[in-house]
Image 1 (cartoon, rainbow, N blue to C red):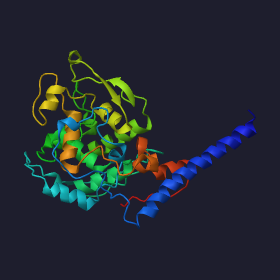
Image 2 (cartoon, rainbow, N blue to C red):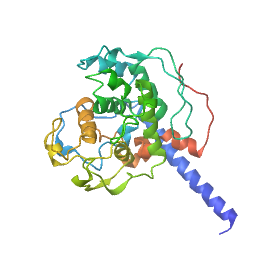
Image 3 (cartoon, rainbow, N blue to C red):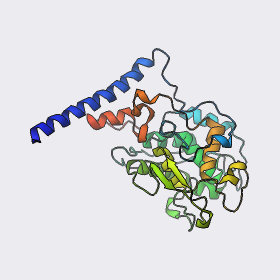
Image 4 (cartoon, one colour):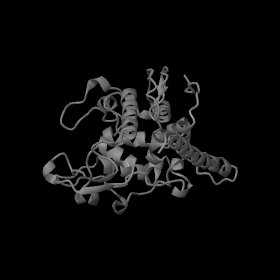
Length: 314
């Protein structure tokens, strides 16, 4: 094949791809005035979890996981205000927490945008701004705070230091370099975006063994991981629940039970609805549902790069 012919065909493919992405974006614009566009909330109504609905290969949809617009700052604050909270050791509940945040650099295309630090930002502001900067649903971040350290309902100083369990391996002490609420939330969101941008990891889309617990003797049944968001959860917490854990939601199973990813699914269902929910049918275009963590905007910008100034408020 000649270079000219190859170049022409490549341009044609790029044009067709751009038109497909543009069509998906146009669909949203056209549906909004008709009242048919999906609401920002990425889930169905909150409900009591049923273990029979847990799917180890599809714990959360890409649409839910990457929907950074699911909640406004006020929505997050109202949610935190409503939660029963019993703090200990003189720390505040998340609803009353604030800290001065630090600047974070732009991590590049398809990764976290820059974050401009500010004085005395509330937990709600931090969760919202990090979610938007890194393209991660703030509901996901809230659930992780609870499943890692019970920080929504039982906060203490240790929990704030280790808020997201980031850099806290099962076999060693936590790395103190990453201690602190803002530090933990930002780095955990950054890590989720890192998994997404570079998906060739221990856990990725496909059929793979996933251990039941840190004890390898408990076994590692094969799981068909069907989307990137679920792969992210396994890379962060590399265990699936066994039958004893599923039979005792929110309680204790047996010596081979692990609850990290099961609790993510359980808490998300209880607080925000079905984590597998998708707002748009697949035939509307994958980017509408944040397939593989990519929005229509980022897909379009890859095909037709544009320049813009940093829009993050101080």
